[in-house]
Amino acid sequence: MDIRRASGDEAVPLGQGRSEGDSWNDILNTSLKPVPAFLREDSYEYRGSEPLSTERYTSPDFFQQECAKMWPNVWQFAAREEEMPHPGDYVLYENVGRSYIVVRQDDGSIRAFHNVCLHRGRKLRDESGSADKFQCAFHGFTWNKDGSLAHIPCRWDFGHLTDEKMQLPEAKVAVWQGFIFVRENDEGPSIEEYLAPLPEHFQEWRNEECTTAIWVGKVVKANWKVTMEAFLEAWHSIVTHPQFLGFLGDANTHYGVYGDHVNRALTPSGVLSPHLMGTGKTEQWIADEFLRGNGRSVSENSLVVPEGMTARQALADMFRQEYSEASNRDLSHVSDGEVIDSLVYNVFPNFSPWGGFMPTICYRWRPWPDQDHTLMEVRILTRVPKGEPHPPCPPMHLLGEDETWSSYTDWGILGAVFDQDMENMPVVQQGLKCSKNKQIELGNYQEIRIRQFHQTLDKYLARF
Ligand code: FES
Ligand SMILES: [Fe+2]
Image 1 (tube, protein in one colour):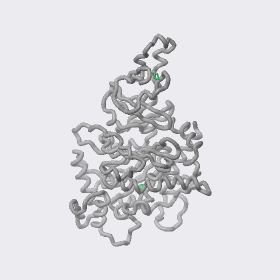
Image 2: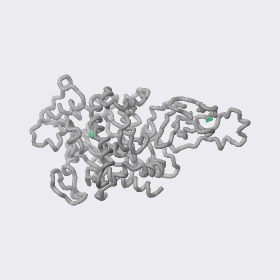
Image 3: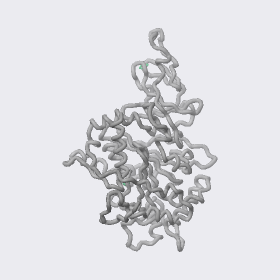
Image 4: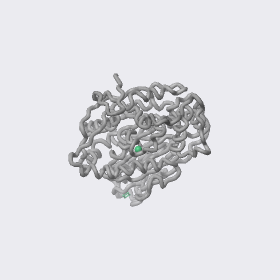
């Protein structure tokens, strides 16, 4: 494909524009270590330029259609394995009117049961925990952790109920790299088919070696898609996160889509934003900006960029060593991008794991509880040092309505970045509701992931 340079106001044929030409591959070529072929792959495809209706984000009817036709038929990221290491450990996973007990079995496998007592409907569990049996707190109907009936008090009064009839209804469960997924309906693709090509791309990144180190959530006053879509493109950095421009190739981001369910945005780091080109910044200045921007003190922890090296190369060298030591693994062969770039993948409809060998981010967005509110969760996954056991998973730190993301201080400058994002969200939701033309527009390249998302959503709404 003819990839045109499209950095300025230059018009190019539909579908042929790219931010800054093919600069992503030019930047990858500076790596002194071999770069995996899949990071170079161009999986962009032009998918039309029609506007989207604002009702997709604001209408209760549209929301109800999502609940009825989309959510029961998709694999949903429900928990991480480290939340439930032992038999009997269970996680309550709730979304759009469903509640599941996701529970570890004696043989190590995981099953998910609808969290509703089959007597008169009390939820069996109010929160996550550990148990061998689930006794309902109302009248005492009790189930084993494999969903079979254990006990009915005064069973003489329930001669009409067989054990078979009292088996708890179950959802499908799949596990991939420590992520546990549930799907309400039986029919549909396997997790491997659904996630493709993630299993291939994440083969070396091995998220099963990682654990949730930090987990923060907050209810956002905006539609779940509005909130998620703010994390599907990097080009809002120029206005929303201007502090990134000294060390982030925002406009070099390489966007791609894979089939219906997977897409990605690969944003190079340790390079000057194209928006600052020609400003005479040195490689040392870029390295310092990177360190400052990632919450490191430059005076105490300064990195001197050696003569003949770029900031990106020097930073990558530093992080290869740092992450090798922290994880007790040899990462000396790993390419620069895999220790420094934002390799942001997204799996339909609401799960976004980052790739690479650094501590990675993982997002999840759920309607909470309606079309105007989202529970946004951010996890930081760190690699457990080789030979050491997985530490216990911390519970989610749920921020209150008036608490900012930066009020949680354990993740350094990251909270301030989310605060910048979140300032937009409620105002977008308000704007969508008072829009005169009731439509929004998308960029053909930089917003292709949003386009793909809505096309896939439409397929679910039409199919079921
Ligand atoms: S509602 Fe659960 S035992 Fe009665
Ligand atoms: Fe952002």
